[in-house]
Image (cartoon, one colour):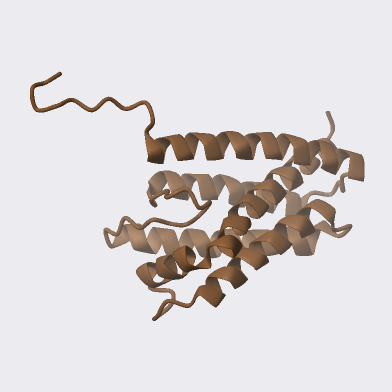
Length: 174
């Protein structure tokens, strides 16, 4: 496995995550619009802003997957990730626990969200500065791997929110 293969996997992971994150925002922009107010980014609920941000995420994901020039696409991904992370860190620093609307799963922000984003920032930075440009075959392979990783992450984060296997004890301890 060469450097171009690893860059292809990075492209695939970023592409899958951005598309998976953007689509729920386009479909349900009101949730993100409320979140932006809670984060202090917007002063009032603007669903059009939520839809626009979702469209930007999808566009960045597609650009990372398909663009022959990786630097602009990966720089856009890096910029979005840094901005999202800064807003989350600021929120956590003042004690807020906000539903982030990151993937439409009801996930609440935490320091785990920050760590996840820092890993993704590292991936985006690595793709941006990589001297090797993956072929389309390497990007497709990376996209398949990225999609599997993204689906796994979404499954785990959804299960953490929904908690389908939790046991409720009644007042009798049963």
